Image (cartoon, rainbow, N blue to C red; front, top):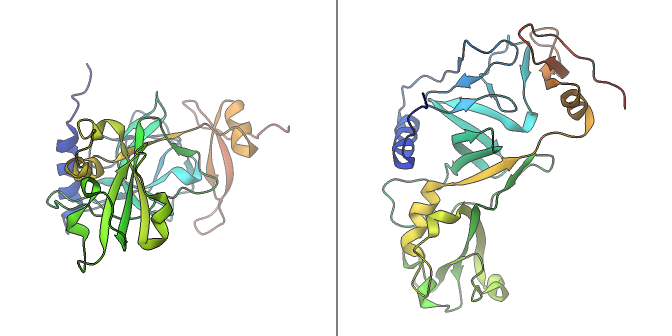
Length: 270
């Protein structure tokens, strides 16, 4: 039987209420059907967390884990969170068959705000297997600018002192004032799902779709490891991760056998 699919709004409401709870306990619950040391986890709601993602529960006694280092998640008040150089992003869904993860920026999400919470440019680690997908679009905000631009793209609620103006443009808009970026306090590009902007085309202001689009978030895809120790491990049929010999010992690379009885695999020499 297929699991019931929650609506995006239902999931967002659940996550927002969970993050707002001050007394909620943070926990990671292993799924009993998967053998250690490569279990799958649930972090409070219906996101299945498994290899190459992994949950760091802050348990100092844990001697090993499977997963890519850059796909480490934290379980915060029943919400899985991916930490990136640009900030923290809540994970709402992981589709393993498609190798995509859906998330939204915790710095800009708001159920009640009607003005865009313009945050930061998305930044991924240089060695990360993550990248944007073709289903993503980009919203570019020109914030607190000293030029008068196109009224249809004006974000009036970001006017500030009344002498500077803010604008938002979508991907492919030929009127995007890239040449005037130096006259603005900041220029910020934020990814959103392309489908979240449907119906906001033409010459009308895209502002009506901006806040819902930011709240809906975006998605990233990940590529399998092909190089180095992890690439060798996966080609040998293993799952890469880390292990340590003692509670406070150093972490070292490990390659685990994907079988009912876990065992370490020595990567083959190239």
